[in-house]
Structures are given as C-alpha cells and as structure tokens.
Length: 391
Image 1 (cartoon, helix red, strand yellow):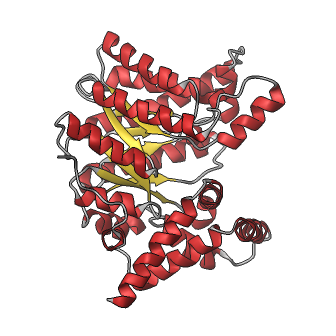
Image 2 (spheres, rainbow, N blue to C red):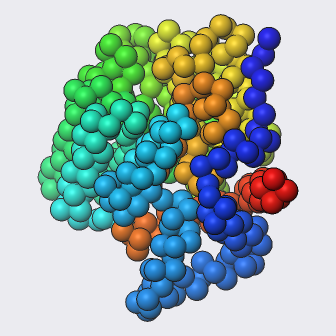
C-alpha cells in the first residue's frame, strides 16, 4: 500500500504558526501574489536601504521573520527548537552576500565552521551548507573555468579557496555532519564541481559527507549526475547529491543570448520536471552508492520520491534520503512529510537584516515568477485561517 500523504492538510502544515504569524504570512504572500505590487515594494526597499532610511525594523518584523531564523546562530535557536519539536531538522544557511575581499571570504569560512560545530552539539541540525562564491572571487572561478592563464597572485588566491573549502569539509567529516555545496551559475559551476569531487574523494569513503548540487533545469545536469556516480564507484567514494530544479534561469538564458551560445536551460517546465523526476529515480536505483536530498517545493516530485521509496521497501527514516524546503515556504510539504516519518529539513537563512536583503529579494522574485507558487501558498494560508476561525 502506497504511503498516504496529503499536502492539503493545513492543520498539520501550519501547526507551528500562531494566528498572528499566519496573518503575517497572509499579508506577505498577498503582496508577492501581485507582481506589480511586489515589484514596487522591492524597489522601495532597495531605495530606502540605499538612502540609509530606517526601514530595517519594518523588514525585520515582516519578510525577515518569515523567511529567516535570526541575525546570528544564537538568535536562530528558537526557530531550530520549534522545527525540531515537529521532527524537522534545520540547515543553518549563513546568507550574507557580497563579501568580496580575502578577509570577507575568511570570515564566511569561520562562520560556516561555527555552523558545523553548532550542528555537532545540537542534534537538531542534520546538515550544513555553503556557497563557493562566499569563499572565493566569482571572477576567479570564472577565469579558471574558461581555462585562462592565471597570474601568480590568482594561483595563490585559488589555493586559499581550496584551503577554505577543505577546512569546512574536513570539519564536517570529523563531526559526522554532512555538508551541502550549493550550485551556482553554469559559467562557474564546473570549477565548483571540481572542488566538490575533490572533497568527496577525501571525505566520502565511508558514507556521503560532502554533497554536490545538481540543477535539473540545466540540460546537462542529469548526465552530469550519472557521470558523477560512475566516477565515485570507480574511485571508491559515495556520492552526495542534492537535486533541485534551479535558481538562475533568467540570468542563464539572457547570458546565452548575449554571447551567442546555446541556452543551457531546458526548453520548458515539463522538460525540467521530467529531468528532476528522472534524477530522483536514478538516485533511488543507486542508493547503495548515493545519498540524495530532494530540494523541491514541487508537490508531485516529493510525492514521487515517497512512492519510489515504498516500491523498493525503503524505510521513511532511511538516512540516505532527505527532503528539504526553504523556511517560510511549502510548509504543507515539509510538515506533512515529517508527520509521516520522513527525513525533512528546512533551509534556515540567518545574518544581519541588511546583509540578508539580497536573499529576501530573491525569495520575493521567485514567488512572483514561479507559476502558481505564491497563489498556492496563499490559498493554503487562507484555508487554514478559515479553518481556525470556524473551529
């Protein structure tokens, strides 16, 4: 018998939200659900921050509280504990962007190491995560991928990048806390892959500790995933795979058009969905060598993975399979899966309000552009508000 999971059960989905928090969520997604209103609001916020107007308090009490854990790891403790009470793990994501100096890269490394230490002491933080561009110059990564000759200073800089990545992965290995390496733009992704597989060959000998991320809206990602599994088998290490649809579609298509090369993006949503679901099937079929995280807000794909597990008699709590969504989004998926006994974690961003603004603005843009995302969230929130009122 297939697992009985309903992503429409709002009493489970929003069980952790007070009435006031749910009303705040209703306000936020009502804004996002109107593209012109969302665009106007984000433009106003950008301008206010640029002019140093006192808007951080308003942002903190609205979007920041909804989508972020806090300004520090310590401030995020209440969110971590609350999620854990519903059997949902936290992935602390230091979401400060724009650190472009060597000192900034070192600071990000040290903060990421703090998340590893916190995770090892907590028992409620099953993964850590970092972006390579938080530890390295984007231009340097791009130059390496383009196979351009590096100066001595650039070679030294890349060795420092490798040192930072290795230090985080070594700490993760020592503490037994898996670490996710986020995916980025195609024109630096090969360099990121290179680093990820180097780390896997060192630290994934017993099990998957280092996870690379595969964006399945890319035409090449499914074959890249299959090649990575084959390479891992050949070299004697396990593959950690976080599969997502992707986050840079408009930027990728625009760059391909400007520079005159074929778009690396799937032709339509159906092709992306098929590739994503095929990636899940492939990972489950190769579970002896692969650990997989399904990073998706798509209900059908999450349900598919539960069905694949059922067909192969894989226990819901098998630690080689995880489901993950962003904090503040798709609670109907996260909380209903967790209640059914599956391994679920929420990406919980943290950092100073002003520094996390690029992340928050992307969430607003994502919910506005992804067909049906904000309207689905809004429908569920309003359904739960009505249920509570009648109750």
